[in-house]
Length: 416
Ligand SMILES: *Cc1c(COP(=O)(O)O)cnc(C)c1O
View 1: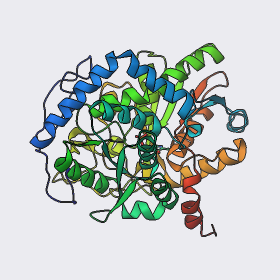
View 2: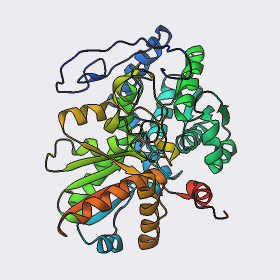
View 3: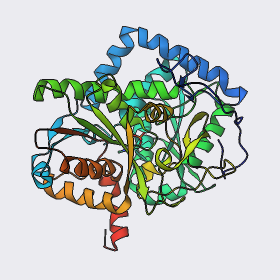
């Protein structure tokens, strides 16, 4: 919890550990990254969560219940779609889309919130809190809570409330309370600060449903596991439909959950290249982007050691992205690890490239993608253009773009 939002609640300890496999270790370290940098008050809750999660994983009825929800409530498996017109237009490799935008609530976030809602009930808790940036995680959490009859409070920065109005209204329709956060940059990182503050005083009765592969152990590994349904399905679909694995997988990276979810089941397939795309924003100057893996350095943010955008004093820098869901100065520790060992690479897409990719996909394929996902589409188009027609580029289309229509209209100065 470092940064301009107030004094840090978490000790600034820099762990020195060699990069090693397998990961994570029992303390949640991916090489030197991850771990737990938290106040005393949360240790018990995180231990309980780790234990309950391990027990749930061993319990076939837990997996069966989650799988049933994925199938009949979320609408999984999400399709693997050959974007033929886009591929032809680009004139290189074949582009395939993993259609997480078609999930109930419109993004991959629901894969995680249903898993955590089931765990909440196993722990005997009835109240759930969450942070949200674009509002997708807030809506997915509110949805899971409505489904199970759990109380739900969502923290959201005032700037994000302004640019993602439809999702704010949806959360309220679903019975959740949306609490505006007016501190700091009034965006995602401030919302996480407030959610953690709430949790420290309510941990006995409340589960914090974190929305990405970040934060203290066990969140990074647990959220990655819930999201890895994306990659497991995609791997099977590639083998069934194409008879082989893709050459490259591209996904956008905010906290890193949709990327982690699609990458993880392919980690041992060394012939499959993995490319994460961070928010390149307006320029490469600090404050103009949200790309810690490209421009940051390791540090502690929100309870975990990973790449962070920070100044010389270790204070978290302001960040910018056109997409609220990527507007975050940190990234999940496993991505820092994959970068360090060279298993995945990480590029950026600028706001302008993203808007162009958004238009191209809408007009060639009839798919309005989220601005977050359009980062992945932009880099996938560049990569496909440089590859021969017999190669396969798989893009994780993490969400749909209806929520972004008003913001795009505002940016273009047209009426909504
Ligand atoms: C939240 C969100 C993201 C960014 O979060 P990750 O944890 O990096 O996946 C990306 N795409 C969509 C559609 C989102 O809602």
